[in-house]
Figure 1 (cartoon, rainbow, N blue to C red):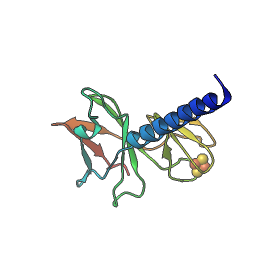
Figure 2 (figure 1 turned 120 degrees about the vertical axis):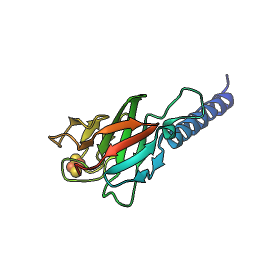
Figure 3 (figure 1 turned 90 degrees about the horizontal axis):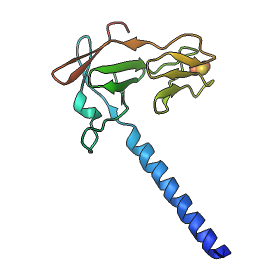
Figure 4 (figure 1 turned 180 degrees about the vertical axis):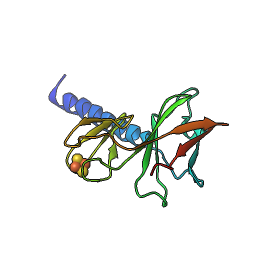
Amino acid sequence: MNRKEFILKSCSACIGASALTFLSSCAATKFSSGKLTKDGILIDTKEFALKEKDRYRLYIVVRNDSLLFPICVYRFTDTDYSAVWMQCAHQGAELNVAGDYLQCPAHGSEYDNRGRVTNGPADRDLRTFPVTINNNQLFIDLRKV
Ligand code: FES
């Protein structure tokens, strides 16, 4: 392979890798406002479904004007979800979702997908909310907020 061929092949590989990264990051985060009720928020479990049969999103970020911070809802199985308040336990910054964990842009604290602190400076877990399922609706109980 000569130099020109090497550069062309390398650039094609880089462009392909960049496009894949971009597409996968775009497809990764789904936002939902949910449906606010007196005691919490309802989310249709279908919002986790991907186009491919039997494939599901890892999480949905619930943003609602009535909430001071978003809630990240992780799906583990059909019957196992977690709802994690996205406010850092250190000094209160809004967290970013990084796949199966949450990260604070302010000082770098990290939390797992159940809200447990895994990396400081935060020294306590995030708020979490009970999640129940009824008729394909997730109910996130916000009475603890
Ligand atoms: S506010 Fe999140 S680590 Fe400091």
